[in-house]
Image (cartoon, rainbow, N blue to C red):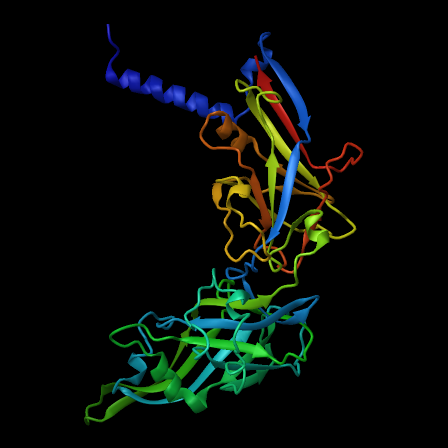
Length: 426
């Protein structure tokens, strides 16, 4: 006697849901089974490897200028979108026969620090293309290694425009801003940015400020929630003809936002302090691989993992993790198989890729706790391999902040990294 197809499908679905729940949810009914035991164990066999890649700042909400503590935020690249925020005005449309004239062109950048008063720091803006470098940049991949050789002084030489911080005041907020007046080159800039048949014109700008100024200043990037950098164009346009057959001319203003931007940051070199601890920092390019040995000797294959908490303790001598957030994901290959030999820092292209996302860690006063239950459950089911996890500084952090955690795994170190696993086993 065979079961109807619908019933068989229902039973199969139930079994799959039951298996999946073994990974995600605690077993409740099995706890009272006399044949099952709950095991609470702590593992200390944890290896770590800290390495350096170029700064990963292309998706951050801020752009950076200046120098401090070995960091040199030398310049910022901005590529202007071909379309204005109304999605209909293009640079090409600003040079057609209906345009009577361009009245003004300004490039504006807004600072998030509302406490900055009117300053004397001078910022400069220029075209970027240049003859020395490829001006088509990628905000994810372009970094200072693209500019360590060759002479780019010609790009940062005679600017198109210069500006200093001005205080903006209205009824709701006060924000300093830079306003570069490009009206003297408006026709050249507009025609240079216009899209033409046969390819996309380069619409890149480079912004920098005098290197004799110290300290790092911030401005909103295109990834911010508001106050994006923008190119504002005011112009007169023929919008119709009146009853006397005279042109009707209107004055319009359009804003063009960037479609990509990135600050080029020259970081300090990786140090012995960085590699002697578990270290992560975005502007310095510090990331760490953790290898956690979990096998049948310490967690049986038939065990159902209820929790797996990896705990790292702050090295308070070097860092303060209050408010710091770490990013984490499992990796798809053994890092020793893909790293260059010999290793020269920074590693230009990070060879260690993501396998699966992991939950955000919980950060307290002096420790950070990562929940690895889903990862170890997937490993037990043969869905993924346990090559380890990668730690990095989350985008919400100050990119120049570095978090250091205890690395020493000797028994005498009460703050050594640990993995506490609670599981149910027959």
